[in-house]
Length: 127
Image 1 (spheres, one colour):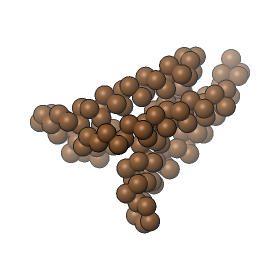
Image 2 (cartoon, one colour; image 1 turned 90 degrees about the vertical axis):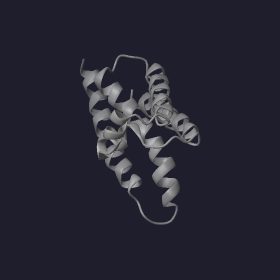
Image 3 (cartoon, rainbow, N blue to C red; image 1 turned 180 degrees about the horizontal axis):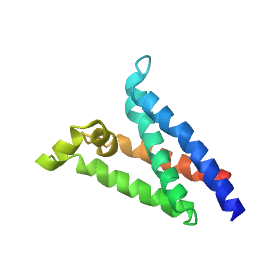
Image 4 (cartoon, one colour; image 1 turned 135 degrees about the vertical axis):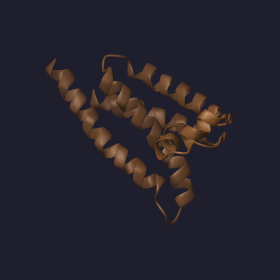
């Protein structure tokens, strides 16, 4: 039990690093801002969700969490091709845009893979 609480604390500290870094990169203006805002932010988005799930249910194998996060975010990417009024209403808010995005691009998929791999490695190292 003590080991599990140390692990969850390490995940929480990681989340306290990844979350503000993700927002900072998403809103960065400067050299390479398009790449950072749109690509690197996707990597951090994957890491964030993997860590949230591991924090909530720490005993699930990290590989399965990373795989699930990858498939869910890929599904959300495809969902961006659909624009019914209820989704447009959600996307009109900051939280909605941050969580489900606004426009589909196949270029996000490699960054999702990279993010899930980094999350898997990071969490394995914390264990």
